[in-house]
Image 1 (cartoon, helix red, strand yellow):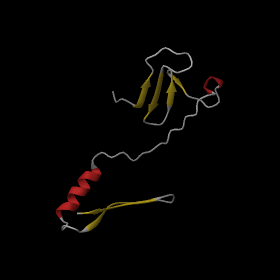
Image 2: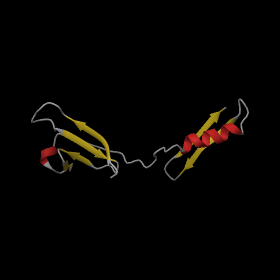
Image 3: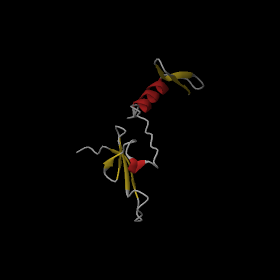
Image 4: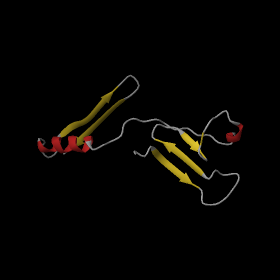
Length: 97
């Protein structure tokens, strides 16, 4: 079974004011003491949690692309390794070999 946890924080000390565990899944869901975090729950009135959901996970494609570019490049030459543009942002990575 694939582990869906992204971050797991455990409290080793017993304290009523501090949760014993905080778990964040890869989908961005937050669990405090095995219960899903809810902003409207008065139990969590002192907590402010914001998780950004990001789908850009590097699985080695960028490294593979850099190695392919390196084969055809001369020393000192600049090439675009990554070029992503959408309506909200533009990201471009230029590499000098």
